[in-house]
Amino acid sequence: MNDLEKFFQSNNEKNINKWLHYFDIYEENFSKYRNKKITVLEIGVFRGGSLKMWKNYFKDESLIVGIDINPNCKKFENKDTKIFIGDQTDQNFLNKVIKIIGKPDIIIDDGGHTSNQQITTFNNLYNKLNDQGTYLVEDTHSSYHPKFQDREDNFTFIEYAKSLSDKLNFWYQCNDYKIYKNEIKEEIDTPYFTKNTYKISFYNSIVVFEKKQIQTPRSILK
Image 1 (cartoon, rainbow, N blue to C red):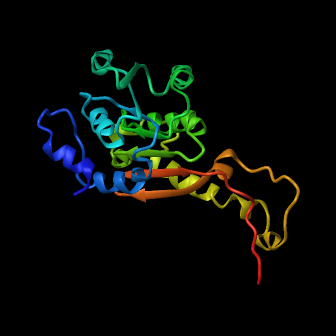
Image 2 (image 1 turned 90 degrees about the vertical axis):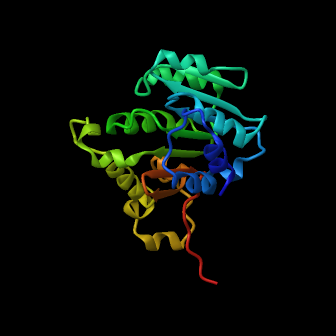
C-alpha cells in the first residue's frame, strides 16, 4: 500500500471519493515529483479532502491549487492551498488562474466528467502545463455513459485521446518513414502536441499524458 492509499484509508472525514485502483496509477505517475517544489492543479474540489491528500504526499514545498464551480468550495482554502471558483470550460477563467499560479507541473481533471468539460479543459490547459509535466484525466468511464456525452459531435474523451495517439506518430503521416534515416535539417511543421508529448498512458478509467520536448526522429544503422 503506497502513501496515498494509506492517507485515504486512514481518513475518516468522508471528504475523499476515489476508486481504489487509482492509487497505484497516481504513485506510478507522480512519485517522481515528491520532495520537489512543484505546483499541482486539481479540477474538482468536492469536499476538499483530495487537496489535503496531495499536500500530504508532495510535502511543504508544493503549491496545491483547486478549481471548482461551486462557490462553497472556497472555504477549503488555507495558507497551503489556493481555491479558484469558476467554470473549467471557461478559457478566460483558466488563463487568469495560470497567470496567478504559473505553469503547473501536474494537472488532474477530476471535474464534471462530461465529454465537453474534459476535452475543452485539456485543449485549454495542456499547453500551459510545464514542459516536463503530467496531465491526468480521471473517471474516464464517463465516456461510456450517455449522461456525460454532451457534445454535438458525440466525441467522448476516450475517443479524443485515441485520436491524439495518432499525433504521436505525426512524423510518419507527414513523411515516409525512410526519410528519417537521414538528418532532416529543414523545419517540419508539426503540431504542438506532437512536439511536446512523450507518451499517452491508458488505464482503467484514467488517461495520462506526459510532456517532454520531442526532437525529429532519426533512424541510424551502426
